Length: 92
Image (cartoon, rainbow, N blue to C red; front, side, top):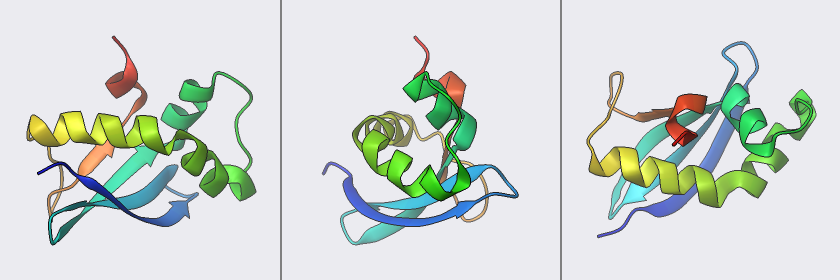
């Protein structure tokens, strides 16, 4: 069963991440992407804090495709296990 979109959770300025979730059937799991990775994907000026949710929505398809790859490879981090995306995850 493919993963499905769940929800945007929050932009955490202190940690420099956007938190969101994905669904595997009934199971929701936590995900995060670094703001540096999002800025690298857009190859433009850094987004302002007030623009992070909008930026995430613009990049959502690419972000979720990367989550899918890491999920299939069982590349989980933390407790409870989740997926964390960094700039390196989008190279290659």
